[in-house]
Length: 287
Image 1: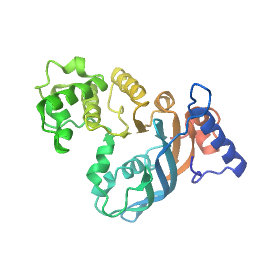
Image 2: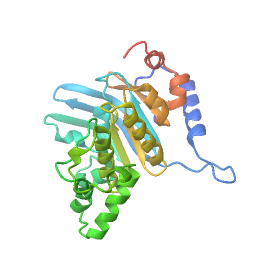
Image 3: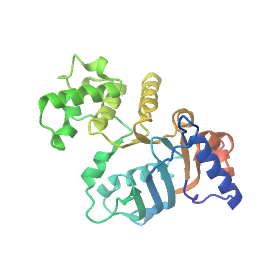
C-alpha cells in the first residue's frame, strides 16, 4: 500500500499496517510460498478540481490485482470523484481539472495521446442507478463489442450469453432477448448494466453505489456477483453501506473531506482502525 494521506499515525504504525496488509491478502502456492501480487492502479498525489473547488487533496492509493477495494466515507467526501478519475469519466465535466498521476499497469492514464476509449474498455464502470440503453436486452450487451469491431453474429450471440451468465441474468432473460431492457426490474437492469460492461472483457470494474437504488434481494444478488467476479476482475466499489463494504471487500479506503484518512485490510479497518476518525465513522458516530 502507498503511504496514507491525511492520517494522523506515526511511522511505526504505518509499518505495522503495511505488514498486516500484505501478510493477510497475499496468496500462497502449494508449497506455502507467497505469490507476488501485481499493482494494477497506482494513484500518486492526485488533486482534482471542479472549477475553483478542490474535491480531492493529495490522494495516494494503490490497488492490487484481483481484489475488491471499497471506498467508504460520508457524502461529498470525494469517493465518487476519485472513482471517476480512474477511467477519466471526469473529463466530461466542463471546468474540471486533474493534477497528479494515476498509472494503470505502469502506464500514465493522463498522458498525452492516451486512447481514452481503449482505457474505458479495460476499466469499465457501473453507475449508481441502472442506465440501460433504449434498445433490446440483446442489443444492450452486443453494443460494446460492436463498437470495438465485432460483427460476427455467432460471436455476438456467444458474448451476449456469456456476459448475461456471468451477471447471473441469463436464465431470467434468455427467452426475451428481443424485449426492451426497460421491461426488466431495477435489480435486473443493474445486472444487465454489469453484463454490458463484462461484454468487452474489462480488467477492472468501477462500481459507484451499485446497490443504492435496489431492494435487499437485488442487493444480495449484486453482492454475490461481486464475490464471483473478484478472482478474475479487479473491482473498486464506492458504497455508503458499511455492512456491504465489510461483506464484499478485501481492502478499504476511508475518505473524508477529499482526503484519504486510512487504508488497509477491510477487517482491520472495521475492527482495529489506526485513526480515531476512522473508528468514529465505522462505529456510526458521524456520517
